[in-house]
Image (cartoon, rainbow, N blue to C red):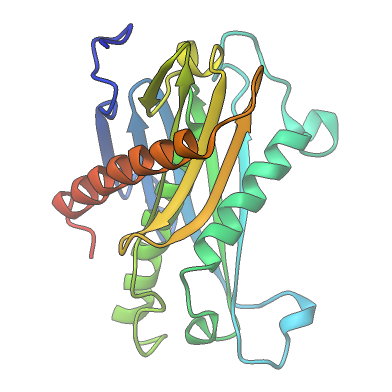
Length: 239
């Protein structure tokens, strides 16, 4: 079935990666997936949370926010509200644990890498774009640490990327734009490594339970999309 934007059911939206988008960051990328645009940065801090002091291990933490005019109606800034909303907290925790799961934190030494994701424009898939972009920003920060001989080797052996998929009506689609996501009967977000290992699967059915065969088919669709993302990442020159 051809979708509202002309894509095939298993087709990603156009992906653009603008590397070193924020020159003051240790690593950064503007990731654009269709009309979703997220600035992802990585900043290295020479200290760790109290529970890691003296262990020799590092840490990775993430923050996520949507700019006020990133969606159709103005979103109040977290600083005005006094704390991140529940959705932002959920997403930044997803980003942090997704990257940590693929990293040897001992190789970072006692330092923290902060991953900051700012959504400039939201059109579906902001959390999956943030996970993918955060890993790219993190990898560039690690390359800098390696070049400066701060760390002995890169603290990861696999890349991390994420994509959404879902069922709209009776059709399964990859990489949902907002027009599809807002009407999806099943919504799934998948985070995987470049070897095809699963990090996280978030799946929700609304209206009717999801059959196991449908779940597996969606997972296969997501893996196909993530493999496509890794090819784009490779072509962009990421190691």
